[in-house]
Image 1 (cartoon, rainbow, N blue to C red):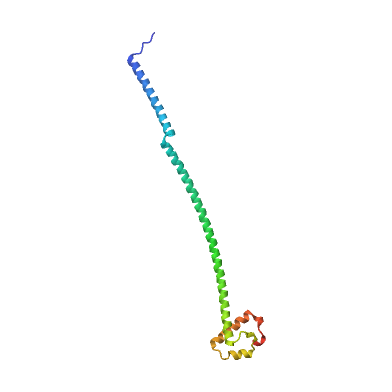
Image 2: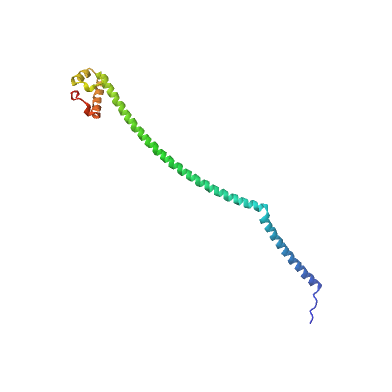
Length: 166
């Protein structure tokens, strides 16, 4: 048996299906080519990649800046603490020197008052009678200074007095 030749309408349908499949294949191929062209040669994709690179670089720069700022803050805090310690020590030393200066000033004022009242700078050379005679007419305020001076001088230099002046 011999097969009957296909009819013209069925050949036309077969040809139309074949052309349609071929068109779909070309369409898919064209879309792939266009997609490849867009990603590889498109200025837009270059701009996107440039933006991503810029964004990564910016993030890294920000991280580095934060780290440097933290380290700078730590160093500043440490230097400030050291500076405060030095300032406290200097203040303590200044206070100590001021106290010593005040004490020396008080002692000098007392000595001056006593020497002025006794009309001499060599108190140790005076006898008890001479001291008694010189302080006899002094006002109470000057006598108080004299007594205070004697207490201060005795505690400061006990071995430098002659026994006649005591």
